[in-house]
Image 1 (cartoon, rainbow, N blue to C red):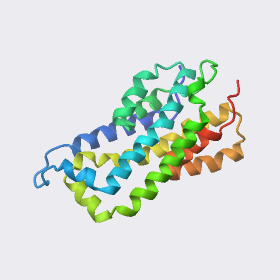
Image 2: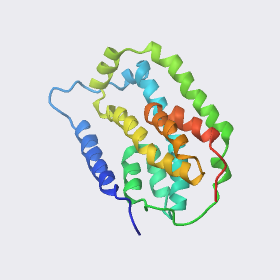
Image 3: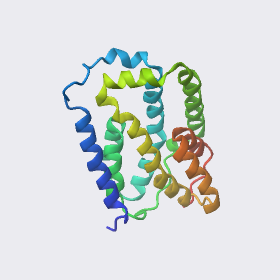
Length: 208
């Protein structure tokens, strides 16, 4: 089974992230004592947590469809992805065959455009409500007392990047012209769930 030439990069990403997660959760000398009560009082943390929760929905949908087509045991990757984000996603990408192995119709429940439109609206809503209430200094203090959760911010950024090959493969399968793919990929890299959900809501019907 031929792997992508970028497989080594995703394995390296997995190792790097695993080491970083372990390091952030070590009891370093001089580290402030944990205070989980700060988390729910920090508007920017609550925004980031909600943003990531909305991000994994379209990402998981793309993983499911992509994994089914490449004959992968996608539940082994998608289910842990909901819990720990980039770690199982990087393994999924590293083990992903370079091309589709089978031709399948997209499951109807992944094509519910109203759901993706609602999710895109939710991203805008939580941003309008929570971002103006937050402060950088407060977020830094919150993370100093909860360093183990600081990885969430890197996880969000990495998911934006790893979404690009999955979204591009989906566009190619659906016959989206190469010129039309570029604006979507740029938007996904910059805005994550907002552009991903918007794409899922308007993407063309699946091409066999």
